[in-house]
Image (cartoon, rainbow, N blue to C red; front, side):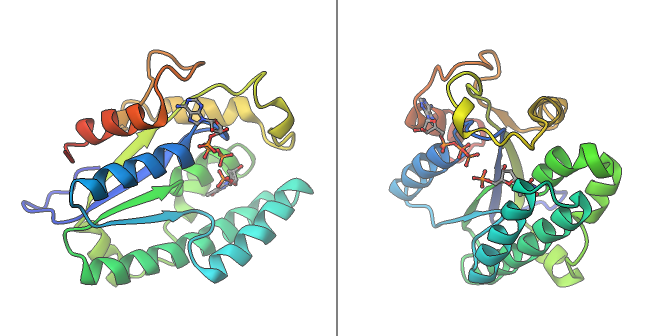
Length: 210
Ligand SMILES: Nc1ncnc2c1ncn2[C@@H]1O[C@H](COP(=O)(O)OP(=O)(O)OP(=O)(O)O)[C@@H](O)[C@H]1O
Ligand SMILES: Cc1cn([C@H]2C[C@H](O)[C@@H](COP(=O)(O)O)O2)c(=O)[nH]c1=O
């Protein structure tokens, strides 16, 4: 969301969407485009980004596959998020006009764990562990949320995690549409009408980055 600061110097873009909706492909194309235009870009993903974040990812995804406790999974995701935000914070301190592209962030915890632990509880949990300093630094960034949708079934049926309530996940993302600053393929939810490069260009324009 847009912060009240008059001169936001950095941009923090969260790419969200259901599994297989094209986040990685779009992040890659967006990163290439913005770097080509001379912007300094940092790419992160949740869970992941740091070595501890990668370990947490492994544990969290294993727990998901074995239908582990959703509270535990949400806490593991949040721990990985704090790791990622700390890395972002360090990078922004030396790249004050930089652009951060994060594949997934807090909306994923609400979308994926929210139906089991409650959406409000999940949202509350996504603030845990972010100290004042981190808030202060990140709040200077211009936050943008980009939602992606793409084909889920039947194309990726084999790759789809059967422990996830995909309809609930997608419904939560759709509920965010009015708050999202950019929605790719909004009018074509079940197909990929644009290539990743075209999506990236459309997003960059909507986010006023080019
Ligand atoms: N715009 C597009 N048009 C056609 N195919 C696409 C497009 N974007 C992504 N794909 C293909 O769809 C598949 C999933 O894409 P990608 O890995 O980028 O999605 P993702 O949202 O990051 O997935 P996950 O949630 O599993 O990490 C890949 O095979 C990719 O090549
Ligand atoms: C951040 C986050 C992620 N998840 C889920 C969503 C996906 O199924 C996997 C991550 O895989 P991807 O290849 O990086 O998309 O984890 C979740 O359940 N909760 C979260 O907070």
